[in-house]
Image 1: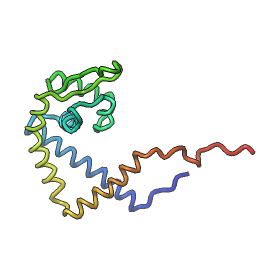
Image 2: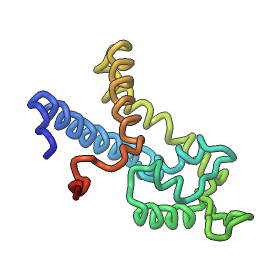
Image 3: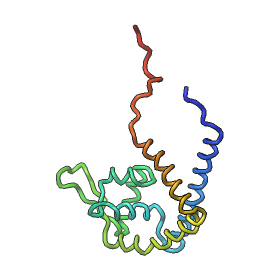
Length: 163
């Protein structure tokens, strides 16, 4: 049986979840009110803008964004209809489809970025010193790296040795 997290660990976890929810809600509301761009669109546009050739296979994009795979498909459908993205089949494997950033999508991202970055600075960054921001990034980075490693099977769940 897994050990129960310490009270401090649970309190830190709850604070992380609450801070994320509060900040995402506020940033989402501001971005949409000032630019008309939903934060989900912004997230997809940002990841594609940072990708090589400004395109990613759909399965890769699904790993990077903060929504479910089925939610991403619907979101990309809407973004294609708006002209922000195009779908492009891979030349070497027709099963792979790329989401590609259009010039219109890049313009939309560039226009919305100042609002989003201002919100991050105002609602998050101003509450941290540079040293605290570095420490937080390092601490959360450890959790992220640990979460991306395949821990393998849990030996506590292995069948008992019959011998």
